[in-house]
Image (cartoon, rainbow, N blue to C red; front, side, top):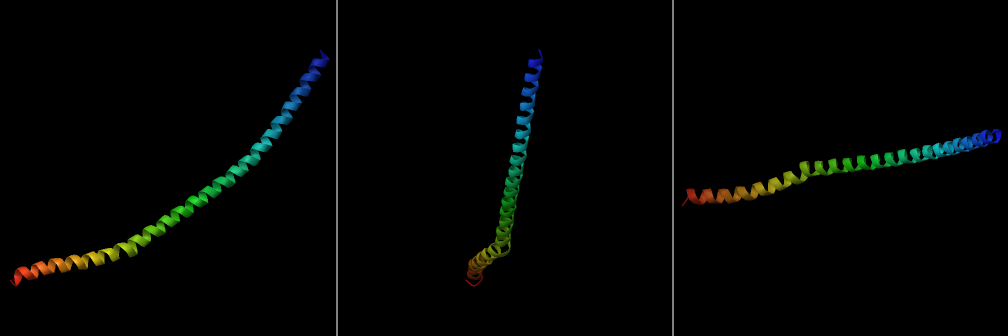
Length: 88
């Protein structure tokens, strides 16, 4: 009977040691996951910032230039029709 209790104690101790080792591995993998998550978050933030810059470029530079060119073209076409209608 004493041998069984000693053997059981040794098995429980071994299981506790294995669980401690597993928890250490989990801790390092959690650290790795946290670093990876931070890198992903940083990449996502950089992507969002790039998209904001592209949106600003389009809204402040490209769209006004296109509007200016199309406005001049259509105003010439419309003025030509109005002038032809008035002075005929």
